Amino acid sequence: MMDIENEPVRWDASYTRTRAWGLPPRRQWHFEASRFSGVEPRDPAKKPDPFTLPNLRMTSTRDESMAINRIQSGAIIIAGSGMANGGRILHHFMQNIGRRESHIVFVGYQAEGTLGRRLVNGAPWVRIHGRDFRVSAKVHTVGGLSAHADQQGLMDWYAGFSGHPPLVLVHGEDKAREALAGEIGQRDGVAVQLARPGMTLDV
Image 1: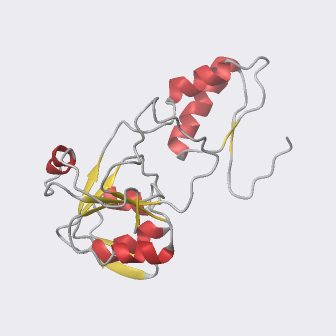
Image 2: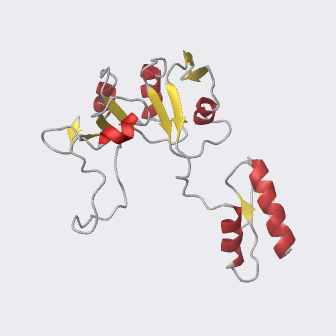
Image 3: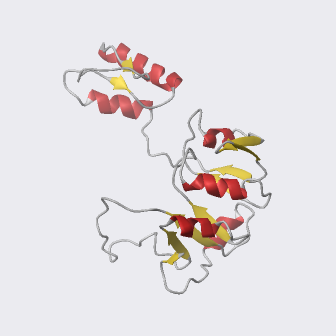
């Protein structure tokens, strides 16, 4: 692993976080990240850097990522692909989803049709890379961390444009998009379109 500090040490503050999920304290955290792009260098005097925990190890290569799967206990893996639809997290799932002592924590919304949604809904089996896996790991969700605006927030945002420009809703589940389209259409007299696969638009 690529250490943030030369000598990884245990961080006692992890006790309260892991204990809430029934995990033993003093875990070593592994953060999966291939690169950070477009991020300005930080001034450490302004705010604490969340990526300088003394027991946080960054993995940037495939081999480093695979090495995490050899750890049998004492690790917390923080990986990308928030809805678990691809990337390294799938390989970690393949190694750990069938272990009763493992915990999976989702901290964001899981859309319909994603592996994350199936896990949150309590699927007893899931298919990953063409193989079926029994879900023995405990699945947890942490709500309230979504960065998306709600319906009223989106309506307020659109109201800030003069002349009510054409509007196409490209993100979200159909039920929510249809409701938002109806509300904006009724308030502003706009024919709101919902993007569909294969649809083309002149912009």
